[in-house]
Amino acid sequence: MATFTLLSMKMEKIDFYLKNGQVARDKTIANLAEKYLNKAKNNLVTMRVLSEINKNNKSRKLLNIPIDYDSNEWVVICGYYAMYSAALALLAKIGFRSKNHSATIIILEEYFVKKNQLNKEDLLLIKNAQFQKEEVEKLSEARHKREIAQYSVTKQMTKEIAEKIIEDAYQFVNKAELIINSD
Image (cartoon, rainbow, N blue to C red; front, top):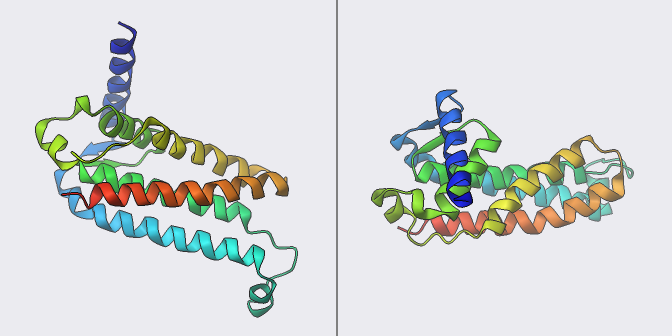
């Protein structure tokens, strides 16, 4: 009974986002899945470049970047948006357009983790998708970490978050790419 209640609540949330226009069913968006994935990859590149600036004094001098400049905040932000763009690519693949981060995460969980809510066409599109709940939670966790890094002034905390999100972002985007390319 508790499982049914949770499932019902999540579907109600999705319906809420659909009614408010923050999420839409749109079969034509499937054509954009690859473009969202490319955007995710571009964010990974930006994240890596910003991370390298923190580590490489030659780059700092060449680009005339002050020695005390810390790009870790933007490493976290780029990592999160790489993951979010990959999530939008996955939603596009199953015919959803989302304008809301929380809605995106809920739909990922419903349609990729708990696959039992998919119709036969959707199930065929993602038959090889084996998202684990932990992978979806990494996106949610990354959003939280991005908020901490963006609004925190503690450099050490931001650096630790940046180091972790680099690994998570690559893992999440790579997993999304495997699913999108599995036809």
